[in-house]
Image 1 (cartoon, rainbow, N blue to C red):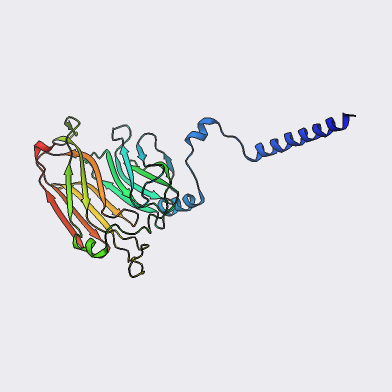
Image 2: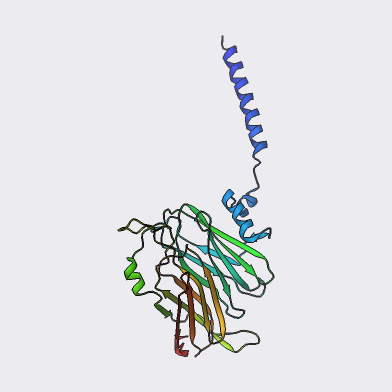
Length: 292
């Protein structure tokens, strides 16, 4: 009486085993180590990496660069991103970092380049994130190698979000800068072949600028506001370059950069910025030894 149901179950079990075996063959399970260290790929990133870096290989971060950002952004128009760099001799000096938001209309948010003896170990800024996306930081070391780290951010609409200020208010304060110097946390150190330098714990540069993305709509006229953003930035101390930036529409309104570097006591900090309308903004601050 029960032989037939048992045979039917047996056939179903054999079919399930065959299907499972076929699926495992089609999608091989990687070792745990390989799963943990593989670099996230997507159709967008596959195309983007060749556009930006050509066929140059990109290696894992290996502790050379680290990124931190909120998993779910409170405001997609001002997503904080923190980068930290390893600058010891074994890793090699980082000479440039490219910051990319995969799903943004213009994915390359900024390219930062560092002076040869600047010793930048920390850089933070704020980004617009237009859709759920990987945010990637690709560091180039002195030997020409690329190292990437990434984090996934849940945010949407950041590039088209209305500006916090109206255009008249934004233009009235255009290009105004403020530099904040934070109390020191680390003792002085010496760079071989250079004068003694002190670690300026951190500085924060704030620039008043709407940094319009070109995707925002004027809430009164209902016309799109033309793109207008900080395109170039140079920070130096005396005649020594600290950092430059080539920026795009993904840098948030009122650009904000917080950074740590090796500073020389008593030498002025100078900032020069240019925007896409050809306007230039400059400022200079004395850096007192007591501030370091």
